[in-house]
Length: 279
Length: 51
Image (tube, rainbow over all chains, first blue to last red):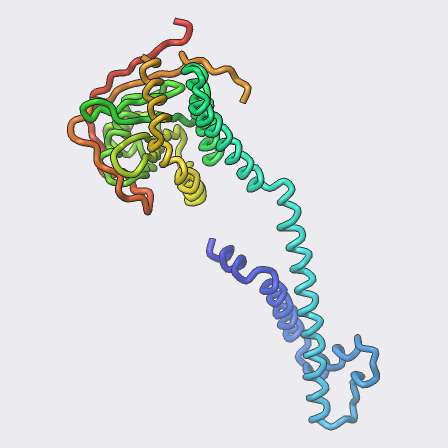
């Protein structure tokens, strides 16, 4: 949509200018006789001051100056009008949505997630019972899932999450709150992503891989910490064409804080403990 | 979140892996997955609900 981009670039003033130019050319086509004189006459008609009245007998030079002055005055009017329109536009476009803006909600949900992490960390400090800590870790995992669900705007049934960390002998241990539909495929994707030095890896067309042609997983994205694998989160999307530039940007922003989670040993220990209780 | 959390909703698996896990060193972009390892042996441990 190239024209849409162009329109956005020039915005409303451009549109008004375009309107005026098209009206002018329309006028030009319909009345070709003595255009300038006609225009001059019409322009001076709206101004009541004597000085601006059109005079037939004035010299051509005076008439030309008169005309230029009129154009300047109309130009000033136009600038004022355009800025007034822009002001109204700003009021409508910017202030109103902020009351119901999604941005506001996003900010709130980030804070809520931070709260949940805070619950976990204070539970460590208070030496709460393992069961209590475990519950708080689970709640934190669930809120992280909820956040990512919101980023990709997907319902529960179309997205799956697997947390992973390093086990013995380079094995990868997986922990999940809900068993993924295709755990074999999920394992293949996670395993392959760990062959790459990138902390974030994505596969937007999972079914294009021979081995995963039949898999219900359509798109895959994962994030883990820098350095040796400590903790990673894999996201499996069961619907096609969900990942876009915008939601990827938000995913990166959101996970940039998450990649530090694995470096908290106490938290990591509890993820490992979850693995054992899961068995 | 007021939902009660049950630990038995948690499942886990282990991927048996040949070769070392590559260190994460690059984060400037999201890399597309380069190649897929076909044969992955996995042992899933499922703790079934109400089982």
